[in-house]
Image (cartoon, rainbow, N blue to C red):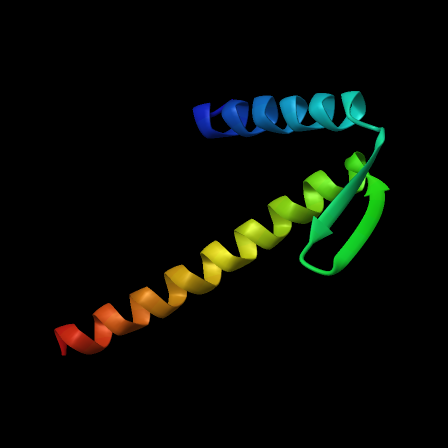
Length: 70
């Protein structure tokens, strides 16, 4: 197995362990909104939002650098 595959499997296993251990209900307060949900749903949701924002920012910055180099 490649090192990247092993690292990915270890990170996935750690993420699953963290999800399984955090199943209680939490309340998310964001200004005027108040949402109660299981932490097992909130954790991957925030990760997906973070990855999406990071991807979009990287694309915008990458496009800007390409235009400046031309």
